[in-house]
Image (cartoon, rainbow over all chains, first blue to last red; front, side):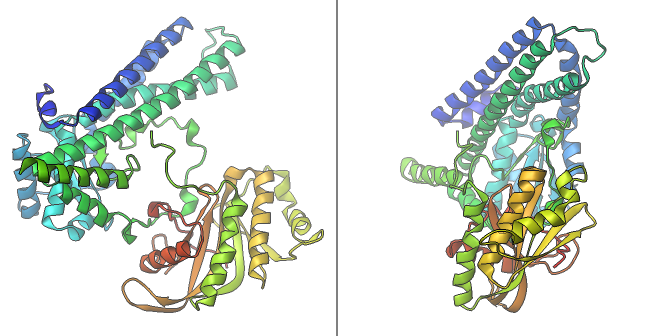
Amino acid sequence: MTSTTTRKFHKDRGLVTRMYFTMFMLGFLYAIFALFLMSTGMELIFIGGIVGVMVVVQYYMSDRLILMSTGAKVVTAEQQPALHRMVKLLADRYEMPMPKVAVIDTPIPNAFATGRNPKNALVAVTTGIQQRLNERELQAVIGHELAHVANRDMRVLAIANFLVTITSFLMTMLFWNMLFGGMGGRRNNSGGGMMVVYLVTIVVYFIGQLLVLALTRYREYGADHTGAEISGDPGALADALEKISGTVNNIPDKDLRKLQTANAFLIIPAALKGEGSMHLFSTHPPLEERVKRLRELEKRMRYGLR
Amino acid sequence: MGLFSGTKTPKDDWSAIATVIKAEAKLQALGEITPSRRAGVIYRNDENNSFQGDIKNELDVVLYVGKGATKTAFEIQDDDRGMRWIVLEDGNFGDLASSVYTVGNAIGMNDGVDNLLAAVFELYFTGTVEDNTYRSGLRTYWIYRYDRKAFYPFVPTGDSEGERDRQTEARLGQDLRKHGLVVEKSLTEWMGLWGIPF
C-alpha cells in the first residue's frame, strides 16, 4: 500500500520529477475545472457519481474484463510450467505475491499486466511472443509487466482516466443538451452560456488527454527502468522490443471498412475499453526511444556497477 | 511531448498519391511489377447527399470534360458493407493515378473527406519474398488510406477477413518505400479490404 517499494526501484530522478509534475498538473487542471463547473451551477455530484461507479467497476473487475476482452486464458503451473517458473522467480525478486498467469492464443507478439494491486495482479503473454523470444528476452518482458504492477501504474491510470472520462461524459451530455435543449428543462442557461461551458469542457478534455498520455509514457519508461534493475540486464528488454517490432505478424486481420469514424461522441469511456492494463506496446512512448534509453542504461550499469 | 513527433507525412493527397507513379515506374523497370489497368476509390455511401444521386454525371464531368481530362473509364459498384467503389480503368498508369486523385478529391469535397476510405491500385508482383519463396505474377493491391495519407501493400489470399500474404506484403512494403512511395510506417494500420470488386 505504501509507496516505499515504488521508490526503491525508481532511481531515475528526472523521470520521477516529471511524472509527479504531470500528476500535479492533472489534479490542478481538474480542480480548476470543478470550480468552474460549480460556478455555472452544474450538478457535479451526479456526473461524478455515474462515472465513479463505472470506474470502480472497471477498477475492481479489470482483470476479468480484460480476460474477457482479450480472450486470455488463465493457465496453471501444470499447463505452462516454464512460464510459471519464470513469473514466480520474478515475482519473488519484486517481493510480490505470485500473480495469475494467462496466455492469449494469437501469433501477434504482445504481453500485458493488470490488477489494482500486487495481490490481484495478472500477467498475460501471447503465444506469439512465447514462440519468438528466447528465455532471457521473455523474462525481461515479464519483468517489465510486473514492474507496472509493483509501481501500481494501473491505479494511477485509473484515477487519471476517471478524470478524463468525466470530461468526455460531460462533453457528450452538453452536446446533446445543446441539440435538444435542456435535459429535464430545469436549468435556464442561455444558449451562449452553455456554449462557453461546452468549449471549456472540450479544452479541458484535450489538455487532460495530453497529460494522461504523458503520464502513461513516464510510467512506461519507469517500468522499463524498474524491470531492468530487477533483472540487471536492460539489454534483454531492448533486444526483445527490437525483435518483436516491425514483424509481419503486426499486420492486422482487420478490414478497413470496420474502422470507426466520428467517435468523438461515443459515450463508452476509455476506462471501459480495456485501458486498465499496461500493454507492452503502445504508441506512446515510441519504441525507438525506449530502446535507446535501455541501451544507455545498459552501458551505465555495465561500467558503473562493475 | 512527442505526441506530434514522428516523420513528415505529406499534407495533401496529391503529393502522397503522386509518389505511386514514380515507385511503379522504378519497380517496373526492375521487372518486379506489372501494372494492371485498374484502380479504385472506396468511400462510405451517403444516400442523403445530392452529389451521390448524380454521381455518374459528376464523374463524367470530372474525368471527361476540359483540356487535359484523362478520359479514364469508370464504373460504380456498391459492396455489401454499405460502401461504394468507383472502379477506374486506364492503360496509362500516370493518368490512372491522376484520375484516382481527381475522383477522390471530388467525393471528398461533396461527400465529406471523412467518408473517403481508400484508393486502391492493382499491380502484379514477381520476385522472392522474405521466406525465400518465389511469387510470380501475384496480384497485389496498393492501398492508399486517406486518413493516414500513406500507402501499404495488400495481398489477399482469400475472400475472408484475415486471409493475406503477410510475407509478401512486408517485403513489398520495404521495396516500395525504398523506391519513393509514401508507405505507412505502422504495420498495425495496414488494414485489409477483402472482396475488392476488381
